[in-house]
Amino acid sequence: MPDITGYRAKVGVIVPSTNTVVEHDTALLRPHGVTFHTGRMRITDPRMDSNANFEALILQIREAISAALADVMTAKPDVMMMGMSGETFWGGAEGHDAFHARVTEATGGLQVTTGAAACRAALEALGVRRIAVFSPYQPVADEQVIRYFTEVGFEIVTMKGLKAPNATAIAEISPAQVIETLREIDSPEAQAIVQVGTNLSMVGIADQAEHWLGKPVVAINAATIWHTLRTAGLQDTFADAGRLLREF
Image (cartoon, rainbow, N blue to C red; front, side, top):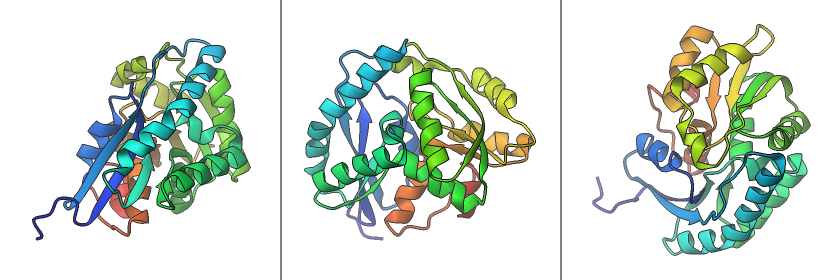
């Protein structure tokens, strides 16, 4: 094995400065020879306790992303992963594609994985169309999630937002609350459950929940890491991170 770190791939990762989960999850799901390098978008006001404050948070992300990308590009990554969620769904399919194009241009043409596109690819790989979704968001953001999934061909059976009061509080949502939410939104009509919001730790819970729900549970961080690895041409699998990373 070569003794150069990141000899298989160096992955640039962009996260809000309030995010404490993405780096944990990339460390958990890091194949040998792959390194993750984080650029953090400075968030000065993390409030998201209303629709207006959530939209203000999105504006902060838009203002801070260029500097974060410029910072992480100095590590010369091979691919770029967006470790954030809400902005990647904003504006539906058209808004996502415009965001993706901007990031691609800012990185000099790197292959870019977004949370929205990764969830879409995951659901297509799993062969499902009817989904239940939950988020830590306010209604204004949930509407964007619904719009995106609907426009790319999925039917949302149920959508639930947990309305975290601020960006750091997302990471404080307890496993018990997550499990309660999974049971609440599950139904025979839903072929899979999707969790969005990258600051919510769901990889392990999603893997376990697939057994007692009897259907795929797509955690956005697992999907985004999966999509990033596959985009980089890496086929590594993981036994305890859900069906997606185990089988596809």
